[in-house]
Amino acid sequence: MSYLELLKLAAPEAIVVVTALAVLTIALTTRRALVLGPIVAVLGVAVAIVAVVMLPSHANLFGGMLVISPLNSLFKIICLALAIATVPLVSSEKALPNPGEYIAVLLLGSVGLMLLVGSEELLMIFIGLELLGLSLYVLAAFDKADVHSAEAGLKYFLFGSTASAFTLFGISLIYGLSGTTALAAIGQKLTTLPLQPLLAVGIVMTLIGFAFKIAAAIPSAAFIASGSKVASFVVLGKIVLIGFGPVHGSADWHAMIAGWSPVLAALAASSILLGNFVALAQTNVRRLLAYSAVAHGGYTLLGVVAGGREGFSATLFYTTTYAVTLIGAFAVVGAVRRETGGDDLQNFAGLAARSPLLAACMAIFFLSLAGLPPLAGFFGKFYLFSVAFHAGGNHGLLWLVAIALFGSFVSLYYYLIVLKVIFVDKNPESATAGNGPDFFSRITVTLLATVVLVLGIMPQTLAAKIIASLP
Image 1 (cartoon, rainbow, N blue to C red):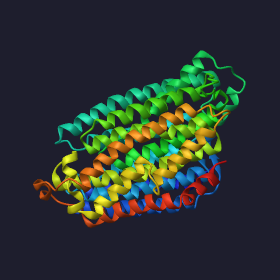
Image 2 (tube, helix red, strand yellow):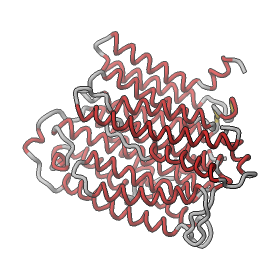
Image 3 (cartoon, rainbow, N blue to C red):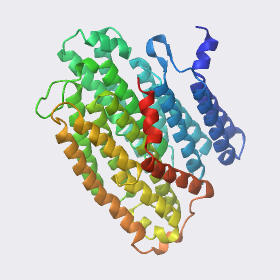
Image 4 (cartoon, one colour):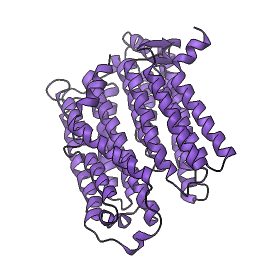
């Protein structure tokens, strides 16, 4: 294969990289970076989406390092669409230092997401994880004047580096036992190997690294927090269902068998309980969303544990709708922070009186996260819970579904507490300080709320595409 043919197949990633460099150049050469940067970023990402659509339906390069399939192309488009939705929110941050550099790093993080989605080879997946991780560290610590931003970046760097070390060590053990890093070849090799202790350690350590990624929620980068979940769950599903498929095991309460399934089931249960109970104690809405993200990661794992085509499609549907909802919720939180100077519960008091549109959109986002009809979160949870309930024989995952239902009831309480403050509590005098959301932020939040509502009323518009893209 010539380099020109390779460039054609990797055109979407190349376009996003060039766009990031163009935005960075604009930031260094003009004072209008806050206006020109977002425009160039949106146009470049839109061109990348067109490039994804024009890719062939199937291609496999270098033993799975770059795989083009309907599933990979669909989720590359979803990741890029999330990037487009985030750029107007970044441009509305008037006090954001160096907005051009911020957008450029965000775009480079998008490249990491695309590499994650488009690969079925462990080393390339690890490279995508690290590119995503480096972007996360920079975005978390971007505001050098804010000591909390620097602290967040340092903490995330330390935890992320540890998780990467676990992942890389697990990959090395799997490579040592199977002799390959391609997922399909690993799956074939494991069919002839017993579940050796070293293999079990390698699988567990690899899953630990991904568990950190799927639970990541960085408030200063809503797109990366949501986009990382989308890409990580796509990759996690490929790894466990294709690469580790022969050592699935069983998480059924009446027939527990060693494998990756009980590990993920235990991780899902602990994430749901820990995430919801810690979120319950929060008085800061941004931290509440961050901790509830851990619980939503646990919900999404139900489909992976259930396994099969239906389970994987339920996981992908839920993580996509959750990503859209999370960006919208963080956008409203950012608007309130700019207006009032904070994002604690008291800062949301009287939001319905100050901005009925933002209050209505926040209600849609939070009720969807709680899983109430007719919103996308309701169908997503119903899809996940029903697939897990019918998985295996004799409803073996009923215990996990029960924990997920209990967690949903707990989450409903703290989501309604925030909505009560928004719609019932009186407007504080300090609410008039600062600047409200600009026109593009309002349009973006409204569009995201509309998507959440449409996917709840007509979920088949996305669910059918996901099922059709699966092999």
